[in-house]
Length: 300
Ligand SMILES: [Zn+2]
Image (cartoon, helix red, strand yellow):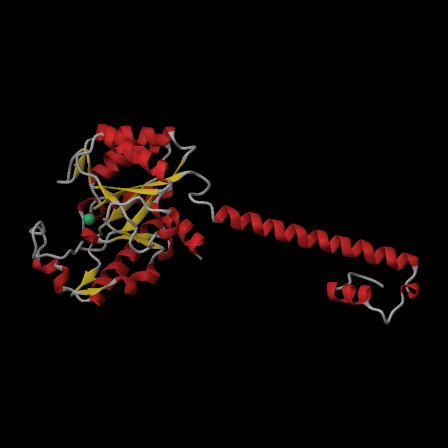
């Protein structure tokens, strides 16, 4: 007997009644038993290894009690000037939902490349930020960018082209990115556009404030709390609640220290991120794309 014997061959030989053991020399018997032990060990190691990987993938939230994603909408100058330096100082990573046509992307596109290199996510917030107009609170929506006047195809085209623009900046593929629905609206011309853009992303963020539990996250409508005027203490209490509920908490910021009607003071934002840093052992703080990829693995 030379070389390695296939497992099936060994088992057949070992169990065979048609071949008395006496026909095997003592040397061959020892060799046969040694090889079987070796194969059993390999099978055991493989099984244990696979088991460990799966267990790790399925631990919410990446082995920590809770997860927090810091998201910032609308490509504002204050994100480049205030937020990113503050996050970098603490080594925290956020998600910045960029609208191609908005000032801080159009005029400062070069400045977003190093942001992506540092590990922040450049998320898709469409090209022109269309929302549903014609109702209370939506007076800012112009007829040209009113989703009631859009088709699903037109909205999908706008989103896909924004992915192309973002990929020119950060070099990432669409499946390594998330989308934030402008105004949280998910319909164009009265029809859902979610399925049409689904293959373009790992997930998408909505605007419904909820603490997401690991087993029940809708990857294409991830809940988020829109922040407007909360104090540092109030933001910190939200983090504590996420830990208590073992949940994912997504913060949705616009202005941070000004530039938008929905705003939070710099001081409150700073208190929040410093608290998050102090709780890093308990909380997984990551861009939403990383959290969404993790959820996807757990759901598969
Ligand atoms: Zn927006």
